[in-house]
Image 1 (cartoon, helix red, strand yellow):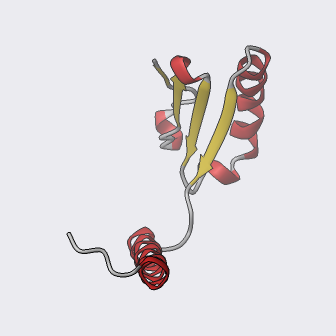
Image 2 (cartoon, one colour):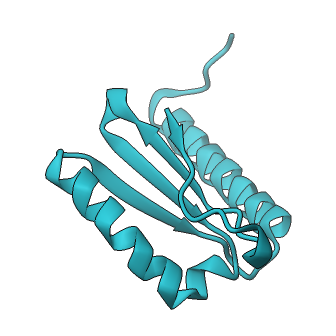
Length: 99
């Protein structure tokens, strides 16, 4: 079930709220302008409270200011490097895996 809260065309709000009942999870996605909107944050408080009372985890995701592509690439490169290091360490302990 997806629930949209606070859509106001004149304010160009793209707020997105996803309710995942099976996982008891509520995701609130805020864009760059919404994350600084004190009025919107205040309007969301009852939503947070309502779902927390029902045992849901409420997660709020805020848009960042940095380049997502660049940061994702760096993260993937770091993970690949760590994976390769683990493989080398494992081969040193057990010998090379031939497959």
